[in-house]
Length: 171
Image (cartoon, rainbow, N blue to C red; front, side, top):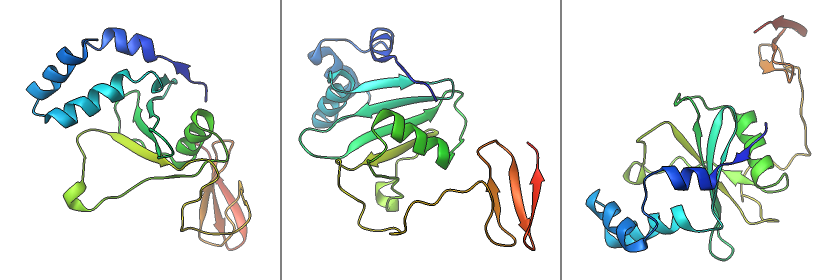
């Protein structure tokens, strides 16, 4: 997946004033508190933060102050609710790095934000690992290992294991 840096294009065309005072006032008119408005302004105009676009996705990459989590805000270019684990893994690998770990949070209902078809990955600082998950060595397969299971091949063909026999379903 190829991504282009569209940060300046978006900043120039999104209608957000470049003056911090104007921008904060605009966000507050939309119902944000002063602190929330300042945070939004910093997120949009912090020179470290980038906006990337591929033929399928737009990804906002927000870098933290210090050693915090990198935030990837991912939405499908066409606005659909598509969520593909392999593609999100590729986005994380391409925009942050292959040896970084990320998590997708399913929050308590009291902290839920679900206003558009947008997904969020929280990337740990390099070298840190999520303190849960499997500790197996890397295993990747085009074929479903157990009877009754499915696996999408890297060639786009879905396969099912039927009693030890692999059956292909073309896309």
